[in-house]
Length: 326
Ligand code: SF4
Image (tube, rainbow, N blue to C red; front, side, top):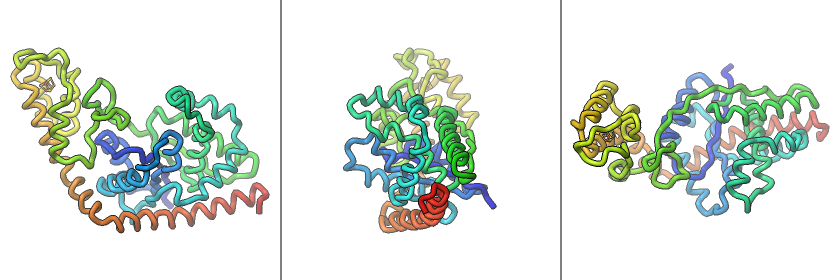
């Protein structure tokens, strides 16, 4: 029997090429060897999203991005977290076995509390318990994570271990499948491409024209003020992006030509946008086809929730029995 993988993404924006080359491509590949459960974690989004008017739109956009990139509803369970309310029930049960001190020491809680001091809600503290509930509800054994998310997964393992210790072996302790996320640079700063930095991303859903416009406006080597100035490709965001979308020998040639001022930034950017648009073209075509079939997206998510619920109900029955509630 295949091991089960669980992973989720918050519906707070459309997915960009950083998400695609990191998480989503990985999700697609995992479908070959694992029984995959992929969840649009809308309840998690509420911990930081104060304006929920767009949440249904973001859910739909995220589902479109995933399906266009190759997530296959025949192979994977794809669903929305709140459509399987058993997760909130399990969250309550697990919160009874999770010491508050474990939650208060989580670095992301401290960061978020600092970032939104007027909205340090209870859900923010309990976030890791809800995350643990997401994973163990489906008895997932494997969770794809980046190195920075390891402490969260360790907390899930500790919660599962504690429950098993108190009530008997129930949950597998999920293992991390370490995933290296490519460092896709922002178009407008020296940081990473991020949905929280407006204008920094190329989204899967952008048109070819929008992609080209964003690339043409992107920052480059700040020391290269004029066409005649030799450039420093190693500090240039555009050069880094070429490495993902342009054949290796051509990337090397650009590097040499940039250093000798034999290529200008405009031509360099035009080449990148052509290659990126060509790479994204099939995804975007598929995405447009799917977007024209809103009923199909709803069916995929409804079917995913039905299949997830079969597993979730069984787990809740077992948990309640073990805790003496049945
Ligand atoms: Fe960057 Fe290309 Fe301009 Fe060199 S030529 S600085 S690699 S955009």
